[in-house]
Length: 156
Image (cartoon, helix red, strand yellow):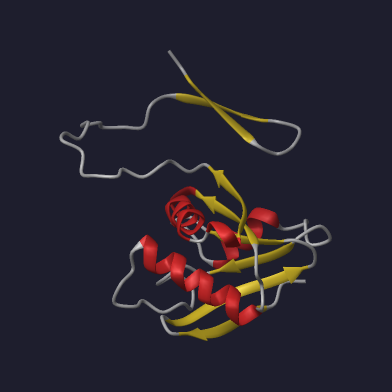
């Protein structure tokens, strides 16, 4: 059962879902959701995992601190885990949450059981010299596999 909670951190308030039991999986959601999107990513797996789905800075009930960098968000996640008494976790980054998930794994390897990136890309490490000017997304086909996963194939 999904229960929405709020916790106070030095970064401000963080709203989250804590559901299930087993090894913890901390979900860093994408751009179009908050704790709701994070929870939905693993809904139905509560018997196998403890799902921790906080809203990132500025999303669904979470504060917007002065420093909203991925490094600050990763530090907030570490503090979040401390307050919940969780030593180690898997971190799952979906879409735009991938950057924060990568930063958490790099900054807190001793707390990371594994890094899972779902529809995420590695962020640039420096500003690109040029930016490709596109007017639309590339053509692709989407296939739903029996596991419910999407496979995208760029068309020719």
